[in-house]
Image (cartoon, rainbow, N blue to C red):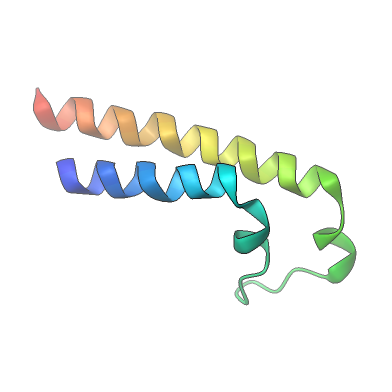
Length: 64
């Protein structure tokens, strides 16, 4: 569980730093109009922040 928490945090940090990479993934297909919308980057960064918190909680519960 500790390794899972670390992996979640690593992916979440990449979501915060490189949102364009995750927006260009092929599944599910996002229309080009949404890719150019700056609000999509903000939404992806918020999801990344949520996943960082979840990853930290998983690590905490794994060490208890």
